[in-house]
Length: 371
Image (cartoon, rainbow, N blue to C red):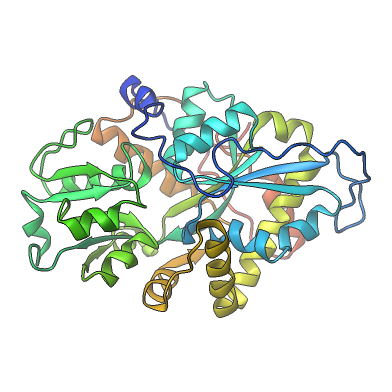
C-alpha cells in the first residue's frame, strides 16, 4: 500500500495545546511520573531474563475502552511479565495531555486513541512515538434526548457534544455530518448541527441541564447518558466494515523503545495476556475494570451503565491500521488535517514476535510500518 499522507493543520496543532483540550486529569494526574527508586535492583522478567529499566511509566484513561491497561495493572498481569521492573501508572482524560506527557518523558508507554496518536506523530515530524499495538475496538455511540430527537434527520438544528476538538469522536462525528450533507465548521462547531466540545466527565450534567441534546461519545459516558433517559440512536461500529475500528492504541516514545526494547516487549506481552484473559473471563474482567475505576475515580459504575457499555467494546491486540488510515482521511475531509507521510507511525515487529510465539496470527501495519 502506498504511503498515506496526512499532516495536521496548524489550527489543530495549536488547539491541542489550549486549555479547552487539556481537561482535568484524574488519579495520578498529568505528568505524574513516580519518583525513581534510588536503590539498584535486578530486574527479572517472567522468562528469567534481566530487564534494562528499573521502572516503566504507563499512561492510560480511566475509561472502559482502556480496560486492557486498567485490568492488566489491576490483576498484576503486566507486572508478571516485567518481573523486577516496577510499573508507575498515570491516568489522563485527554489525548493531547497524554501525548505531552510522553514527549516530556513523564510516561514511556501510553494507551490512547488514534487521533492523538496521529497528532503526536505528525507534530514531531515522525520522531516522537510509534504505535506498537492495539487494545480495543468499538465502544462509541450517538445518544440523544428522545423527546427532542427521534430519527437521525432530527439532529439538524440540535446541539451534540463530542469530547474535545479534533479528538477521535469529534472527527468521526464531523465526518458523519459531512456524509449526511450537513455543514459544520470544524473549529467553531457551528453549523447545521452545533458540535459542542465537552469533557466526558461534564457531559452527563450538560445533558441533564439541557445544554446539549445528545452526544457522540465513548463508553461509559454513552451508557451514563442512557441511564439518564437518553436513547442510543447510532452505534458507530455499524458504520465500519465488520463493525470494527480502532478506539485504543498502544504507543511508546521512540527514545524508550530504542533504549529499552526488552521492557517494551514485556509490556506488550502483558497486554496480549491481559486481552486473552479479558476475552476468556468477560465477567471477571468487567468486575476488575469496575474495581479499577473505583480506585481511580472514587466511584464504581452501576450495573445499568457497566453492562451495556462493556458489551459494546471488543478487546484486540490488532491495531486495526487500515481503520486508522480511514480516520485520518475523515480528519482531512473535516478540514482538521492536511496531507503528510505517516510512514513509520507503526512498529509492530515486537508485537508480531509475541503473537507468533503464542501461535496467534500476526497483524498488519497498512504499509505504514518502520522501514
